[in-house]
Length: 169
Image (cartoon, rainbow, N blue to C red; front, side, top):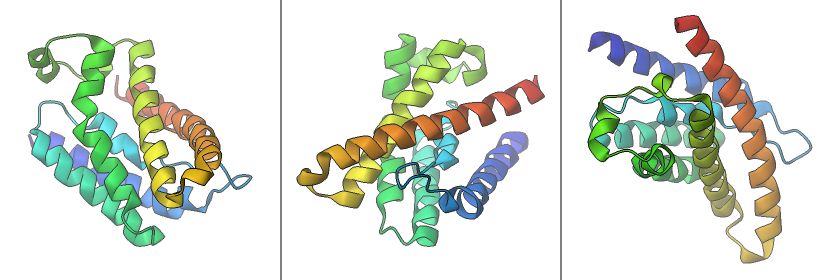
């Protein structure tokens, strides 16, 4: 248990520092904003209680909001994907709910991991940019930023995940 606690704490702090110090300073062409801190939600163990995930997801989003002065959009978006994470895992893996507490994300196939990452990143980014603009007239701007930032965040997150997973195996 202590190993899981320390790995999640290290992941939380590490992702916050990476986001604040490096990724918040990246704004390529005005559209590419990577938010790899949401990998915390993807990698949080399924064996833990859902309320713990929701609390930590809210805290990581709130921490990013605090340092970016974004008014709660990261907390809301991160909390949303954390709340619906199990639903998307069920949609992708097509297993019963009880089986999710016995498996780890490293045990599923690469295509399912990538689909899981991409869907949650896409939803997270759509929510962030929708809340940022909060205007129906900016719909195409929201879509453009969502798609471009999703692709960039997906590449960064997937690259980091497979470097760390291959290192641990």
